[in-house]
Structures are given as C-alpha cells and as structure tokens.
Length: 305
Image (cartoon, rainbow, N blue to C red; front, top):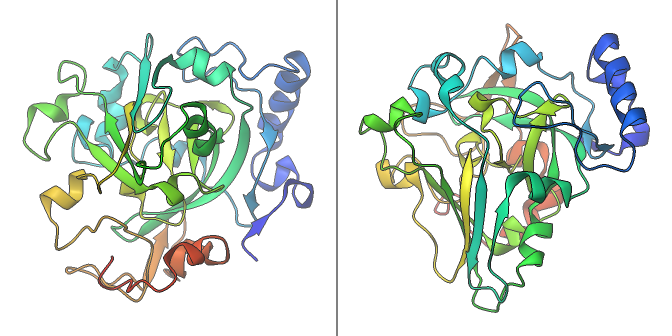
C-alpha cells in the first residue's frame, strides 16, 4: 500500500537528523500557529502536522529545488533556480471567484494563517518520464473551495498563474499562451488528496517551486501542478489549459498518470526516479488508484487522457 498514515513513519524516514531536530524546535516554539515567521522567505520554517505519506525515500531537497519545469523562468531544468530570484512573492493576493456565493480575495499570509497546515509526502511523476518523492506542506484545496460556498454551476475549477514578464523572463517568449492556466473537475479539486502547497521539506516554497502557492494532484502528471497561483475560478464548462492549448494531441485535460497510454513521442511505461540509475515501472494513477480510480469509473481513459 503506497499511502500510509503518520503514525507509521518517523521524521527520519524522510529527512536527515539535523532537519528533524530543527523541525521539532520550530513546532515546539510555535505551537498553535499555522505559520512560523514566513515573511516571504523561502528559508522560513512552517509549523504543521503530519499527514499522508509514502514509504519511499524522499528526493533530496537540493534536487527538488534545482531540477524543475517552470517555463515562466526558462525552458531548461536549471533555469527556474537560476532565474526565479527576481520574483516578488510578497505582497501576494489570490482571487477566488466564479460560481460561488462568497467570492473573495485573500492575502497569501492571511490565507495560510487561516489554515491548519500538514505535511504530505507524495510521489510526483513528470509527463517527461522522470519522478520524485516530495514532502509538501499545505492544506486541502477543498477547504478553500468550501469557504467561498460554490453553487450548483461549479462543475470545474480553473487556475491562473501570475503574469509578470518583468520578473518572469520566460513570459517574454511565446513558449506557451501566457498566463499559464490549468483546471480540474470539481470532484478532483475537492478530493482529499488535492493539496494547495505553501512549502516543501518544512520550509516555505522556493520561488522556483511555485512560491507562494501551488497546486499538487499526485495522481496526475506534474504539469497539472500549476505554480504561483493568483486566481482560482469555479466555472461551469471545462476550462482551457496551457499545455492542452499548445499541443492537444499530446496533453489532455485529465492527464492522469497512465503507463498504458504513451505520449506520442515516448513511452510512459517506466520512469527515471531522480537520484536512481535504473528505470522503474510507472504505476497507474501514480500509485494512488485505490483513492482516486472511482472518480473515473466508466470513463475511457485512453480517450480522456
């Protein structure tokens, strides 16, 4: 079984002893807070509880923060870490609107302080065929959606990334149709596994990983995890998404991890875990099928790729 509850793991299962000690110090010194001295710094420590986890070894933080796809900062894997320092993640607001009774604009720090944060250690599978295991810190998206009281017309959720070419040099090139957009069906968005991440490895999100707020859906390919979110809209019709607009034959709306459906230019049957030499078999729904397969009961997952 891939998912385990917190009592089955210790901090040492996923991180080194020094980080373990620092985490305990932070929790002890800031009990009861949802946030500990965030102040827009990627090195700020977060206070959180332990949530769902995996028995697999976490990818080293240095790899998680230096090997990224974030085309707003460049198309190469090392471009985000090199170029994202110019991004100003504070002040930051997130607008939640659309088919809801109580649309609102949230300041990012107020939004985080109002949520009970938890760590979730999830597998991440990139559509390119590589993977990681990442200890995210965040809160369930369903809590944010519930706060704005969705109406019966809210069938999908649309997300939008910041548009700021002065700080995001990749947006000065026509790599994609900017701003970056993504979407989920409402039942996917409100699924218990769907996370709004504000940190990783106990620290606030670095800019290159999507500061200050990103989406994590561990059963889908990584590009669905839209970064640096500024708007979330509840909508009636399936929203346009960045990669589907760019190459609809290659990137579907659902983009569930499926080893039986190849990308038109490569196989999806295996993956390269960062830090490992040999490839490993890819699991349907990235190993989360027991939790999410019912969302797609009766659907043709080759057609709805």
